[in-house]
Image 1 (cartoon, rainbow, N blue to C red):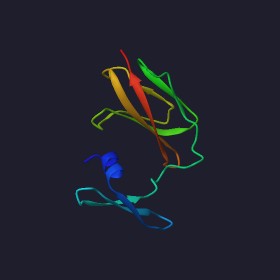
Image 2 (spheres, rainbow, N blue to C red):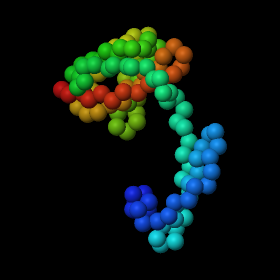
Image 3 (cartoon, rainbow, N blue to C red):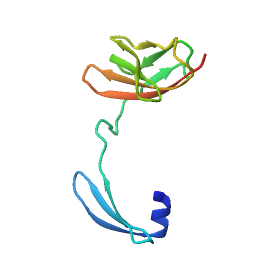
Length: 121
């Protein structure tokens, strides 16, 4: 059952909130009961840095601005690391197949930022 259908055809009751999470119970028309816990995702901040990764789409390399990268990893659609560089704000993407890749930029403090990059031949 899709969540949209569940919310539209059932009841929602609020169970409570703490400083860490909110809890909701969802009941569907067919008698099912679902517990929904909403928690913050670590690493996301309201005052996040403005990081630019360009050009996008890219042919052979991308440049990263707005952060001093300690390590940069490129991941394919299967979540496999296909490229890793350290100590530079550039990553060579030549030789990669066309497609969308996630680029994870880790700064010297260990904080990670993710950008989506399209590679075109």
